[in-house]
Length: 186
Image 1 (tube, rainbow, N blue to C red):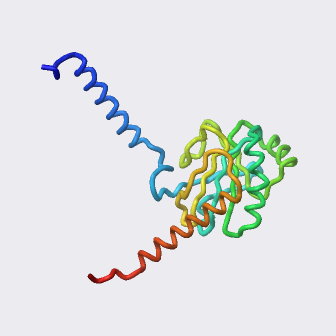
Image 2 (cartoon, rainbow, N blue to C red):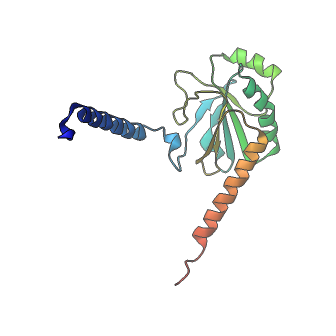
Image 3 (tube, helix red, strand yellow):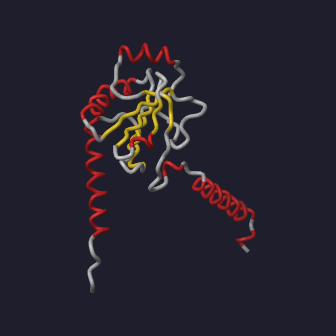
């Protein structure tokens, strides 16, 4: 019988291992990838202030992982700063993903000022509810209800953020309208 040959046994074992590792990967998927996930972010900024994501319910929050040595990150900073200042419905927070102390950050920000809070992230213990960056910049858009709305890998512009906010707002409004519409009797 072909089924009892060693090659079929090896393939069956390999398939079982692949299937079990896929299930394990699914069950260990970061919570940030779950639909409707509301991340928590409670960090201290480089200058000792507290930043709590939950305190910004009702606003869009842009959570931007960056570093002082990252050229695309530096290009985003002035745009994000202007975007943050121009829109009352948006709060940007920068998470410096690198080894730098508060004095080094103060010196850096003296030459690259921004209007939004900056926190220095502990590389060994990054915020649990966000995937650790595999590359920079990495930006998350959190909706006003606290749900993770979108993740951007790589550099983005304030125009891209604005369009994403508009598209998600339109989609949410349509879903809300559909939920409120009376069911038609057939």
